[in-house]
View: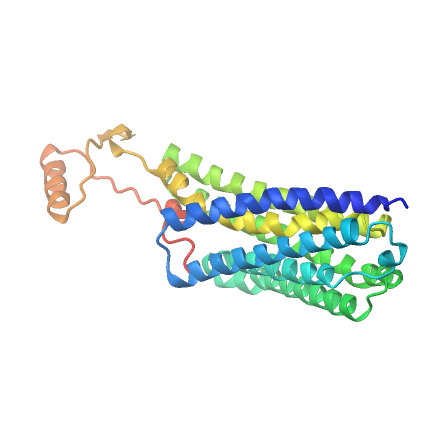
Length: 314
């Protein structure tokens, strides 16, 4: 008996998921070794790891059931195993948690006007994809017959993937606009400008990979309506988990890029040779400037605060 082509996609997706799960474990280790965040953040990271572990367990069970235990048994293809909707449920929670995390960080830094507009839209689409995802899982648990899955895909899975893509694009665009506005309103040093550009690139790259996979799964679900999309379903949750962990673990590197010595900066006719750190040094520096007759210049840069001043507090 030949195995349906879609199970080849499922096997490849399972292998990629295993690889991504290994990367998740590495990122979890690096996070707890290098960062001393609050309890809420540590709990969030732990929950992501537990969900990711559950998901890879379900993936292994699905592949073993169809490709090993029931290989050559045609009737096994007529019904979906319980671990398949269970894996979808875990993905729904992972995607929703990660999107809510990024949406909340952006929402806290928006103006009140934008909070009512763009911020509310982000939350709306995140809740919508969560609702469609939960509905899909319930229907798959109730209707285990494989012949019913096409109808479930058309009415529930397709809207779920569509709302995931829209929510992801909204979150990324909002973050880029927020950083760009901070860039344009501040007096920036060249290195700080590069830092803001780096943060924007990080945001776009994070959205690009997850959105491309979601769009591919959406197209396959609509056009093919077969088990080909299972492989991408296996991968999407791992991508979201790693995007969150990568954002947390990149803070140290971003801070090092943003750190600069003021000794290299010349503003107009004023050459700042040292950066006073204590209040007494500040007053001494100000007195020296007054006695020398040079203009006193104050430069305020809040851009790095947006990205680096406790940016991931819950």
